[in-house]
Length: 330
Image (cartoon, rainbow, N blue to C red):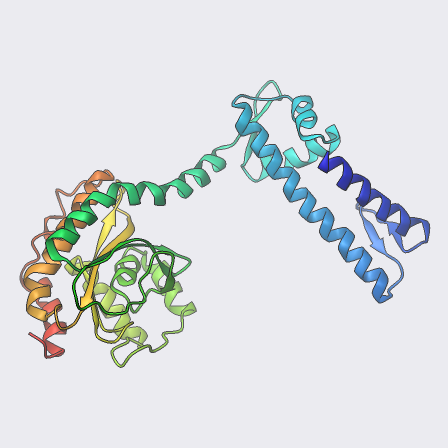
């Protein structure tokens, strides 16, 4: 009923403008504004905006109808359920087909396309990671009693999707909170997620990101950040030594999927008075890496060739030690 009413309102406005000569039909089957007063422009824009928004609503309703039906549908069935003229439904379906959201079989019936499933899987993937990671995060919290975080990368920013807080008496105020998003270059989780980008993606990130200083320890030099991300790739973990929040340190490790792609970051954060260099290197980094690896294996990651994630050694491990030693806190 809503579609019918909005159709009527749109046609009424269009006929009014046509009747008084404010708009005319153009060669493309649309309408062109003839006169140019502010009132005319406003009415014309409103008509065009309503038409655009309405098209989106109708296209989405068609996707919902196909999803609810659960089987290929004929044009007549779709137009009837969507309360649209067959010509309108056919036009919208044509656009959805060209974009990959709908497919048409040999009997001219319509069904959802693979792109819909891909988008749906992407939306549920975050939930899946949270559910899979939850018991491991709880175990990590019980073993170290520091705040445990789970984060993903979205549009070049780190987004925290889960967190278990420490019950230590001394708790520092941190930026990391569930739902918060922020710069990736100055957090342990963010660096781990950046390390999973291809070289081309990482260079694009550098070219489009301003390295703003939050504390005296924030990395603001692109070349230094490149070296830092390379260290993360070699060591299998990232450090945040008070780069986003003063007095807060963080150790993060990558969570990988069955393709070996970094899909999330597991991290532990705490005050620098507890997160000393010795504690981070000897206990925390191996523990976080091991836990992240176990979650990765649940996602289908094959860890046979990635033994260094758990037992960092020699040259690679010493790079992290050098950064901590430079802070003068052992």
